Structures are given as C-alpha cells and as structure tokens.
Image (cartoon, rainbow, N blue to C red; front, top):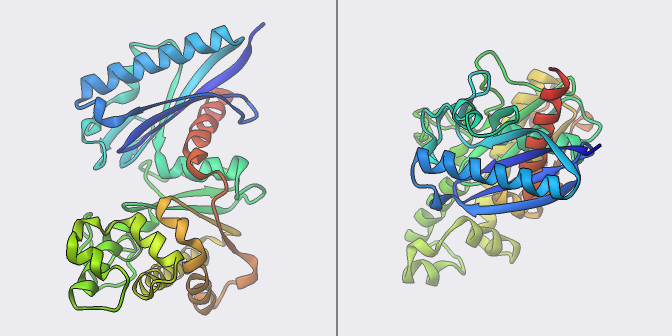
Length: 324
C-alpha cells in the first residue's frame, strides 16, 4: 500500500513552485518553473496540468499516492467557486475558473486559496505560529498581504476574502493605493511604495549612500536594495524602515484590539530587514495597545522562509480531504 501525499503549489508573479508533501508536512520533492513561460490562461492551465501529472509520476515511482493538490495564488481569490477573480501579478489568471479547468486534466481534488492566507496557514502548522490558534500572518513584498488563523483554522470571511491588513487605512490623507483607497498600510509598508518614498527623498538630496546609485540609475533602487542598505546602517534606508515599522505597529494594534490575537508572524522578502524595523514596530504597537495587554501578543519573523506558501497549500489540501 502506498503512502498518501499531496501537492502544494505556490503560484507567484516570478515563479511557480510545486512540492510533494507528506501528512506531517515534510517536503518530499519539489519543482519550479518561471511564470513568464505561461503567458496566457490556456498556457498556464496546460503547464500546471503537466506539472501535476509529472508530480504524480514522481510520487508513484517513490511509493507515494497523491490524494489532492492545494494551490496558492496572489490576488482576489474565491475559494468556494475555485475561481481567481483578479491577480495583478499574474494577469493570465484574471477571471479564471482554475479549479474547474485543471480538474478536467488531473485526477485529484483541487483546492484554491489566496497565497497570503496560505503563508499564514503554513506558519501556523509548522513555523512561527505553532501553538497560537489566534494569529495573523503578514507578507511584505511588492504589496502587503495578510491571512488570519482564528480558533486554529484559516478564516475566509463571508465572501472568501479576509485578513487584508494591507488595506487597513493608516493615513486617511495619505497616498492613493492601487486598490483605490487612500492611505492603506500597503502605501507605507510595502516594497513598491517604500521605494517610491526613498526615491522622493533622494531627489531632494537626502543623506544616503544610495545617492550615487540613484543618480546613475533610479530604477536600480529596488526593495532588495533598501533591505541591504538598511542592514548596513544607511541613514535614509533606516528612516524608511522606521516608517515601515511604525505603520505596521499601528495596523497590528487595530487588529489585535479587534480580535485578541496572541501571535503575529511577518514574512516576505521585504521583511528581511526585520532587525531594522522590529524596534519601531514594537514601540508603536505597545504605545497603541491601550485595552489589550501588550505582553499577551508577540510579533516575530517567519520561520519557513519561501516554503511557507508551499507548506500552507499542502495543509489546505490535507484539511480539505479530511473533511470530505
């Protein structure tokens, strides 16, 4: 008798990553391909189906039997419909009934969810959220994503969309976000908007080691550049991440007051500057937690790095088949 396994898929704007995962969360095998190799919806569905078929063959050769697959996708996802409504980083997925289309080509049940939700689910299962059944996961990247675990389970909300901490208003008179709202957390704490703020400061001759780089090629200033500069104590990059930390502390305080969370886990590539923005985040959070004991909630960096989404996708699949 073969051992059961599931496939976790993390479909991002740059790469699609797949993993064969055991019931205990062990990654048994993994694959990756560039998202750019799938330029339209038909090509994307065909490529994913081929990858899933290849995963099935690998599993059989290794003595495993695939029971289901979980898929994490950036953007507005409607899990109950198996549909991606809007995915700004993967436009080929816009208005795609992904579960139905893939279901015609593979033999296992498929389950779809927002990628930030699966980051939270993965960290809750095997990462920094273990033992915390009321937690928030936050991903800092191009944007700011979020996922909620309440009573030990992923919280999907009334319309399948919840946990969007990136679109909590922190400055009513602030920048107009890509979502259409003004002053979202995302406009203060994401890589995209922080890079924009740093470039504005450099254009006004702010003191920074990045000045020469900006003068030579403004497009060379990216999120990774700011993380590296901040970790090396560049004064402007430090100011930028102070701003990131304080805005995160403000938004997290609002969520903790509302839901009484015990753990907040922060990940994503822009969060690699954790050592820089941790202190201003904690200061702002403790200052604003007036009706909730600050010592009762802990904020910490993610532990699973880039595997959190894959592990969360696998857990989504395991949970779903356990309920059927």
